[in-house]
Length: 151
Image (tube, rainbow, N blue to C red):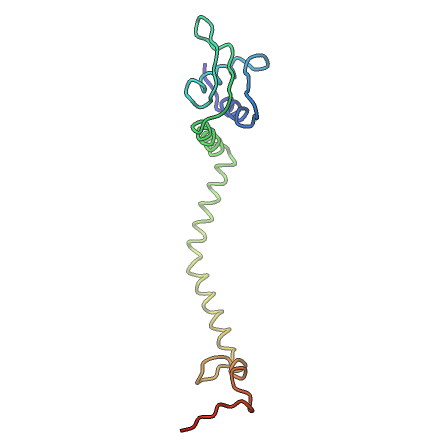
């Protein structure tokens, strides 16, 4: 029997989202019971399972998800997303955008430098102080408070 990742994700999410223990037998399919039993045996879920004389699980009760189970759940979600058409489209768009930004970065830096030069060329600058003229006026002392230097 082949187990699909969607059933494993469903069982792990059910247990992770539950506030109390989750019982797999009455309302669960045979596949969900088997998956829950396997996850409990592999220490992805905490809990226990009951098997018949042939070793087939007939009941499972999960009391919580372990850290390994959380990591496994995230890994399965990531694999499922990357294999979907949305994931492939996102990867393709990010590769194209990275290439375009890499090609455009020298051009953009030249444009920004030219704009800054134009802005600085339009500003009047006091040749001695090298600050804009309006700021130099604000830095001068008022006439009644001129510093007196005695030698």
